[in-house]
Image (cartoon, rainbow, N blue to C red; front, side):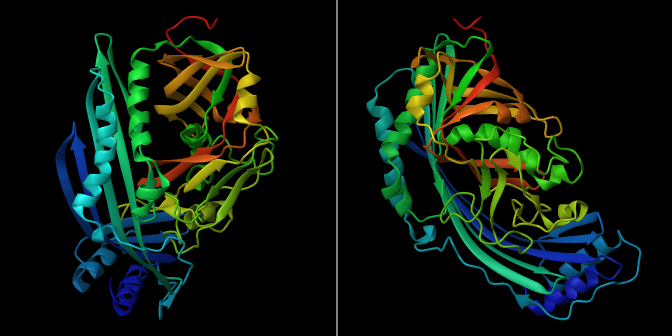
Length: 466
């Protein structure tokens, strides 16, 4: 870290030409990873990063810069170069820095630095062995990897506050490629946590995760092409929540709302979803992949109800975009590292449990599509238009899950699917992922129970659904 005395000098230099807010973000991180490809240890990597980002605000203007020169001379030079963006008189002087203390919901019990390389490889071998035991010649490549990051952060700002936090997070990935004369397909599972190594030993079944990735790749390889047209679609729990994350979550971030660039701008209090839909972004869940104790502006993580019984009641807000909205930040400001200017981002974003069961939803669907996950897509926050490829999908006939299909794409608008959700189950689960946006790639959880969209456009090359 840098000393409070030096931080005060740097903040005051940054404020010298009229900025009304200045913020120093210090980071020291250490990331390590191990990868086993086709049964052989392929890579063992490590990287470290230490640097400072400096942000200056004046009303609705923002300038940002960063440096790895953490000497007094280097930090003051960064502050001096950035303050030249403004041409006014000083309006603030920092005289002290008081520490902000928040509850640590994700304490480091056993650091991953204390876990041996052999112990991690031993866990990965459980997945490798499970895949190899299938003895399926269509599996042409499989990569089992483990990565973790130890991250220390300190933030000092012109509100005369400072805080620090130390976090560790880890993720295991199983990536499988199956191929035959018709082409190739992939399967992926990637559980992650902010807990220690016991999570991978006790909370998940490594063999099941690896086998799931392999079986999805093999199954999709032999699947028929998905039919197209408008139809009911059942979206499975857990990773199925990426549809809400992308099509509705991003448009509910203040970075889009504040500029009028979201399909939900100006919709406060409006019924934007089916009355059975309640959606949240909650960064306070202990140990979860997307949780934070305190955000990158010094605001404590919170549980934000975004949609309640179909009505839009809140957004994910950072202090800077909150200026345009006339609202305070609510613990939603995040960034990948010191090289990125922070902004409003999601944490653990999910649709809450409903009153149905998954079995009831399937039984109530005469003809449609059931999808368990998505393989990528795109969304325009301004219009809400999206398209997402399905990584695992099946036809539903007469209330039963039938043959697997491939090449399915869901096409629509976020605000339309929200209103078309007509059944929600009680089996909420989360799926871990990395979300990329203006402030870099960050850890986020997606989640939902099994739910049904009564009608959505499905793209595919299999003709009409029959």
